[in-house]
Length: 286
Ligand SMILES: [Zn+2]
Image (cartoon, rainbow, N blue to C red; front, side, top):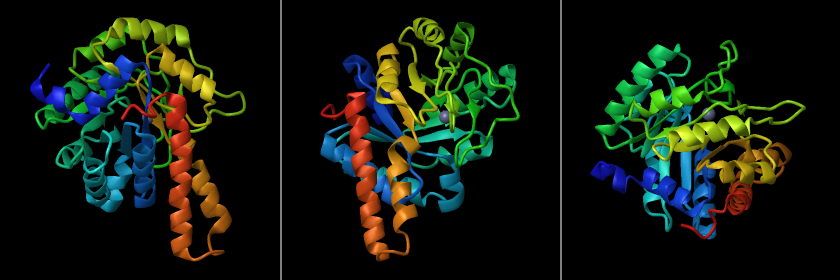
């Protein structure tokens, strides 16, 4: 293993999670209240944490939000890494690689497979030269989330063990397989995951890459622990830790001083995040 991979905070967090058989929350943040709440939750729960941003955050705030989060992460009492989720344009990856990210998802899954593989390998190398870890998506996960391009016009394709092999060859550090998981909302029947497929993927990966779960909106705790038991170590969450915050804004905006609205909003993020850190087994592991 390259020296920088030994010390990269993101990879250390995932290695420790795999050794300890727990999952680490990788929470999308859209603003400073959420970043602050997530870090406070990690400090209080003594839990490792991954804070992630969509490219949207860079497009709107330039590097401000990412730099602030990275600085706060460094002074936390527990390991916290900063990750860019779904970097889908090559210009954006180039720009992001100059920001203090510990890890970047080079998501070329909107290209056909040959292009996806070739571009992934190229950007993995670009990031690695800057000591930044990488994640990719073999196959294609359906749907979209607030802040990331919707792939609804493109056909979803479940990840195959052959694709895992091909992506491992790109040198990528982590893979987000498509095994029935969906970005955004699952609809009335709820998530239907193909655990048999996931087991084949995990066997094929054989510890050479970390496995990431995308698309957890609406997950129940027992489905989450089942995924962690199956070998997922990085758990992407969005609304799972932010829903109470949004509900608070919806109910209280204009009805209390803005300062109080912000402070209570932060508290909502802290409480819900700590609950999921407990469920994922990362509480006390930081
Ligand atoms: Zn995703």
